[in-house]
Amino acid sequence: MDRLGVRLALAIGGAVAVVIVVAGILVNVLVGSRFSQYLEQEQAARRDQAAALVADAYRFNGSLSLTALELRQLATVAGGPVAIFDASGHLVERSAGLGAALGGPVDSAPIVVGGQTVGRIDVQSRGLAVAVVQTASTAFRRAIDQTLLIAGLVAVVVSVLVALAMGLRMTRPLSDMAAATHRLGGGDLSTRVPVPSDREGHDLALAFNSMAESLQRSEQLRRQAASDLAHEIATPVTVLTTQLDAMADGVVPATAGQLAATRETAGEVARLVGDLHDLAAAEGASLLRTPERVDLLALATDSAAAVQALYGQQQVALLGPAVIGAGPVRAEADPRQVGRALQNLLTNAAVYTPAGGTVRLSVAREGGAARIRVADTGPGIPPEHQARVFERFYRADPARARRPGQPGGTGIGLTVARELARANGGDVRIESSSPRGTTFVIELPAVG
Image (cartoon, rainbow, N blue to C red):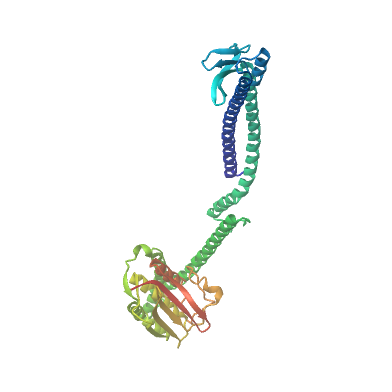
């Protein structure tokens, strides 16, 4: 059972119990207060009615004296023994039982005739009646307490059950997610979680599955890259070892040609190792950058000069750089990192552009962005590969066939370019691609 759901249910049940207890106390106090007020109002009404009857008798008889029968009737109306006093405070009449041991408190009211006070009446509540009423009040309040207690227990049990059902329903996706996370962390990259119908769980499950899919794809790429790298390194290393053994054994003479071939093979190994070093450096570029105000036209000019020899070997024309629109175009960036990113794009364009083709290099400021574009006349990148060409170790050889005789690559050039651009607050993306060519763009925040 989901412990989080149980804890949630118990917390809700406890909250309901607290609410019911507080409500019971408030109801009890309120009922007691209102009942006391009712008794006081009832006693006052009886007293005032008795005083009014004595005032009527005074107007009729001209005296406060009453017969024994009238006095008993007055006591009945007043709700207890009475005593009548004149204006001087002298006792005129009193009924039987006044001052008895079982009597309650005495309350007084003036006797007013024609706006003049002619005396007062004292009314003593019957102690036994008051006790009976108070006993009834206590019993009524106890009944309320018992009713609230039973209702509270029922409400707590029902609320706990409902909260438990809802809590388990709400937290089950989290439990599934936690279990899936443990499986994923244990190496099962095929782990996926079911997508629930509620919005929050739906979004969370989609995000988790997307992450798992990305991890699985990255692991597949890593394994493929490791296999490719092992193969690419093994081939020149085997050739290099064979050449050196042959020359050491005297089977092949150590001529200048053989030494040059050996050096070229060693250079291939060094290039592969250098690519891996570049990737590691690019991933930490944000920590190593030394930003400054860079003129992107000058930076593009230097980068073009650095790859000019390669373009000559590839028989590809490099046109530019040119400024599109009003200049100058400046950005706040590390010139070495952005220059390296641009050289990777230029090298990529040279390798995939057929002999006799062209690559155009341009810079432009468009709104708040400074952009460097590299547009080649190669075969283009099909849409199904465009989203993945920036993944490390991914090589879209089926998408952009290399020129005959071109050496295999590790597939990290574009990855390094994007990492370096993002380390400087920008990005690298494919702006357009078709069978007539592809345009890559480095985008950086522009400064004045």
